[in-house]
Image 1 (cartoon, rainbow, N blue to C red):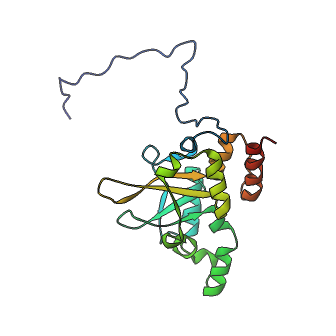
Image 2 (cartoon, helix red, strand yellow; image 1 turned 90 degrees about the horizontal axis):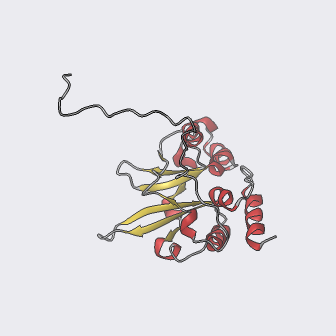
Image 3 (cartoon, rainbow, N blue to C red; image 1 turned 60 degrees about the vertical axis):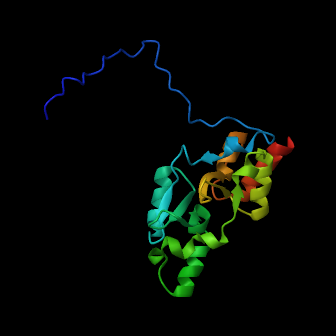
Length: 199
């Protein structure tokens, strides 16, 4: 490939001997129960959502979660519409064993579609409500539904519904300064409520 004379390499600079500071743009701020809910929402316009297809194996879903450092994957179809979601609880709880027993197959043969929460059973929060809510409101909403994740939807100019954000109990716990107990979300919720109550 011939070098284009109109494109010159940029000049180089030395790294400061005093140290090059790493910006913390992606570190979410510490919050309290009264903080704006939007501060604990993962904005999917800025952070690409973690997705998987319904025919993926549970092992593939688990690997995808580990690699991405998440506890939930959105299940999407070929048109990139949401068909459900799957969490670590769905994969590591008793649900896969029950489904495998009922269908008389090995657990390793199960697919995401077999244990995911289908879109018909998913509830969402409206961005209009979230934008006026506090962190405490989100915690109360998630606890009342017995869920560790909540999705946020809105409508574009054409009236089409779009997924705008995700709330995660573990993310909220981190921002509140609560120790997270993997797979023990009831305990994490109790500790979140203790922080909110000022105990």
